[in-house]
Image (cartoon, helix red, strand yellow):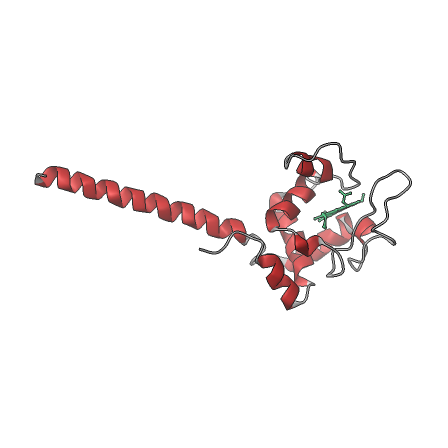
Length: 155
Ligand code: HEC
């Protein structure tokens, strides 16, 4: 190998490494979208947009595990008695942005009638993350850690 082609090989290696680092960086932020959010704004938006169904104190609708006569499920609590913390960040975000039916259809579950509307027109992505971060902030530390473990690992 002459000197010139050695340098080219080295440059290619450096570029490949850069690409690896870049994709790692995206992976890191993708798993932790709820960190460093505006919890006060999230709480206000929750009260305005979500509390009517999910409850002022995140308690959900009464008897939330029993479908209504229409077959539609009531809104579940977002506190630690519900199952919000059983889901990873991405599912919670898509459920809020697209609504229940579209979020499930995107995962191959069709024909489900959901009472959860999509908020993609009413809220920006950042606003949705602020609300979800506020919801998370009300959970005990142990529950927060279990939920965090469902997200893409930090490395
Ligand atoms: C019109 C009533 C209604 C409003 C308003 C509403 N939801 Fe829901 N939501 C539901 C129902 C009903 C479900 C139950 C699941 C289903 O039927 O799809 C649900 C489910 C969810 C879920 C997924 C399930 C889970 O385990 O928690 C998330 C996340 C969620 N809602 C977030 C929100 C957020 C955030 C807001 C406010 C921006 C909001 N919802 C406003 C009715 C509502």
